[in-house]
Length: 124
Image (tube, rainbow, N blue to C red; front, side):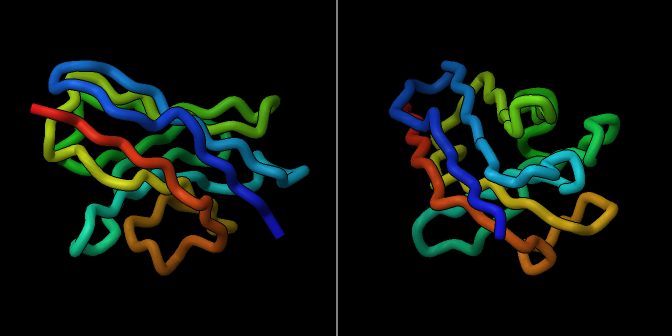
């Protein structure tokens, strides 16, 4: 069982930056592909960004490319999502997820463990 705990959400204005973090309890954190998803009320959970086990590969949803950066520190069991130039449409609950697979999956159904989520609200 892996426990994921997100932190760093909040209320910001359009154009601001915010970094959310996710710390895992897994002793073998480096064995997991990690990803960030988001879900706004009434909408499906969507892929935002993913990172490979050793951090050498990343993947982003088109609307966040060039604005968001995912990274990980395996020594600290933590994955980060740096969000710059935030827009009101980025408002959502942001979830981190881990997968025992070997590739960065887009579908949330292929992730094994989930955090409780952290709210990010961007005002216009």
